[in-house]
Length: 185
Image (cartoon, rainbow, N blue to C red):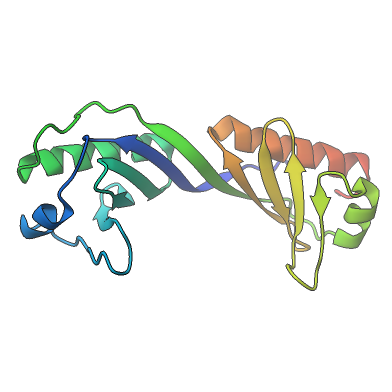
């Protein structure tokens, strides 16, 4: 049976303004916002629809994390831009250029794997496996440029993709390599 990916997290960034006064944003009553510059230089703000969290910086830059799709990351950033405009922030870019920085996805090969066998078969190139340090095998795929964490349970975590196809491509490569080694039933 063919495995499919499940997107767990999309991290995207943008610039909504040239600068933000984070204290002013806090004072405006942005509900649920947290700002303590002695602990972290940005304001943290969470929303539920779509579910996402933002790191808002004085530079006007924003990082959105926690969205489950690229589309939801875009919606969340648009909602944030409108919310900031509504509470009185000036010169908000309501149509910002949004850059996906990272996608984290998971997959399940539905079989157990012997990571020692995989590490030996793949050799040292593109693979790290030190079970006393980390329980998974780290496989660096060159194209698409993603990292696949492989666990003996057959579960995978694919990270580093900039689009869903990068993650799917990483999964296809791992499945093909493991199938060629006779590791998949």
